[in-house]
Image 1: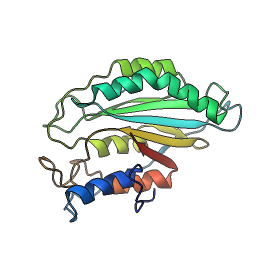
Image 2 (image 1 turned 45 degrees about the vertical axis):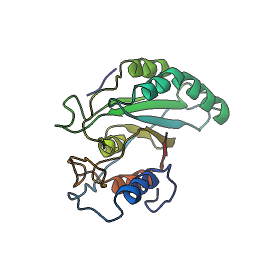
Image 3 (image 1 turned 90 degrees about the vertical axis):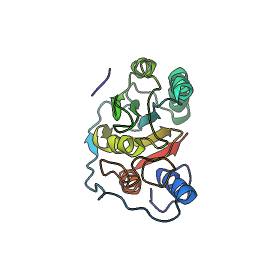
Image 4 (image 1 turned 120 degrees about the vertical axis):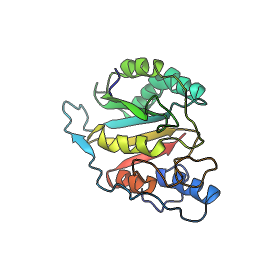
Amino acid sequence: MDEEMDVYSSDPYSSSGYYSYYRSRFNPEPVERPPPITDYNIRFVEGSGLSRGKCIDLVFILDCTGSMQKYINSVRDHIIGICDMIRGEEGLNGPDDLRVAVVNYRDHPPQDSTYVYKFHPFTSDIPDVQNYLKGLTASGGGDGPEAVTAAMAATLTDLEWRREAARMAVLVADAPPHGIGEGGDQFKQGDPDGHDPLVIARMMAQNGITMFMR
């Protein structure tokens, strides 16, 4: 199926910590960016039929540029085992207690002409997610940074989260977002769509989405 945090945290595995790490490493001084988008409206859908009153919504955000095939394969090969482990450790017994989504991304044109991001919506059908992952290939990407912030924004605007769920996002990437001073960045002023990693990190935190980086 293919449908087209506190921002001051020092934790490098949080979304804000990830951004702050790259900013301090590559460009300690603030850089000028386009006006950020600040009106993200997270999409919620009411759940039903939950057996225990406890559920998890989990999204994998995957960099699908040229260097990432082995990591895509790893998520694909282990997704069912990961979900079984989560179910066991969290005591999730109902068929809809765990839902998984995927947001896969590359880069903005002209750096990449295929797509900026695509997504597979939340589903409890984990084999269906695995089949979606089987169709993902690593290709493209021009400069070092990629469309990380566009994919992060998509987790807020394109996915439908359950209000009652514990909400988690796992970013699997090997390149930083645009606009933080990385050498060779063709979008030095930031994401061309106006997304700002710090703003998105704040919105994710305010909406109870915990982000991890792999």
